[in-house]
Length: 272
Ligand code: DGL
Image (cartoon, helix red, strand yellow):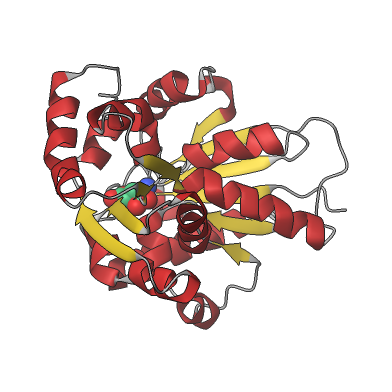
């Protein structure tokens, strides 16, 4: 039993996809969420910068005495290795989204034609291909980067039927339709915020994988197996962001159907 909080981080609002699932399946856990909204997007940056930001974020979460860190960011998970984390002196249980999402995709796929839509840096890393070769080498992976979807989500253009979002989705999903994928990994945690619109654009014919939610489920198993679950009925979540609280709270309201203003605070990037 361990009543310390779970630490979750992302470049912005995307990691809320993992938080939403964590709160559903682990209601007794406290969560500290760190959204680096002052430096989003990460997906267009170099590996070196992504490692630097991720290490800062993890060190910051550790000041909140978290028992485990979930990197709910595909860009971080595909670019930051266990070795990078160890050489930065971070010694905490660390979980990512790549293996859980790939395992979920393999379980869901009927025909072994799996797509992954993620950020530029995530696709460039080849990490999803590597994960798939370990889990199901016979499956085919089709990757496509969809960088504009992150600013679209961060700017709250998430309401059903938004014409700009719809057009961007048509553009980014076309290769997956052409390649007839049967399963699509939403490999950037921002994308499941557009889940319904993506489903509609694919004519409900493709099985979707929410990478943040898949990671939440595997994290629950890990906590249980290691006797790290909190011993309480109901936990609470706090949110920390590195830019204006208003924008984050507004996007979160539409996605979590909850007003999190009173539990959200700003921290200056220079104080990390
Ligand atoms: N949610 C992040 C991810 O999963 C967003 C990346 C970005 O900041 O560009 O990749």
